[in-house]
Length: 102
Image (cartoon, rainbow, N blue to C red):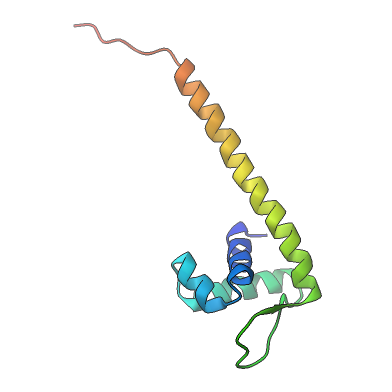
């Protein structure tokens, strides 16, 4: 499961709009739609109820389930980056400083 697709999915739900999610993410709407359709294909189910000319997005039951997991997976991603950054920061402070002699 692609974390980028999950980010697009979460942003679409948060903003209740594919168009607004694309703008917030700095992409065109078709990129967001492709990522979400790819996620739906991978999962084998629709995540959104699709109605022509609907002004709001509506999650399917599967979409609500995926949203819960997406929040957790993205939180774990942030936690992992933070932990690794902290380890790298500490390691760089403990590394011996090289001195140049002339």
